[in-house]
Image (cartoon, rainbow, N blue to C red; front, top):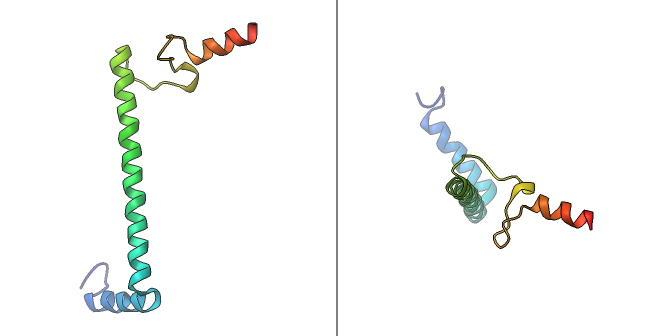
Length: 89
């Protein structure tokens, strides 16, 4: 017995049918696309973790910067402060 009542021979037959229907080239492209998507997802998660660590290092507090609370690297003013100043002028 194999996985959940499916034997190895049944799995091989399904694999042969899939290969005949789609061909090896299409399956190879599908596998490459799936692998690229997974790599991109992992990279995005890693970049997000780095942003969180940088914020924690700067403020000493854990958390994430909201879009309105991001500090400008040159002036130290938040985006929200700049928007308020431009509206009052």
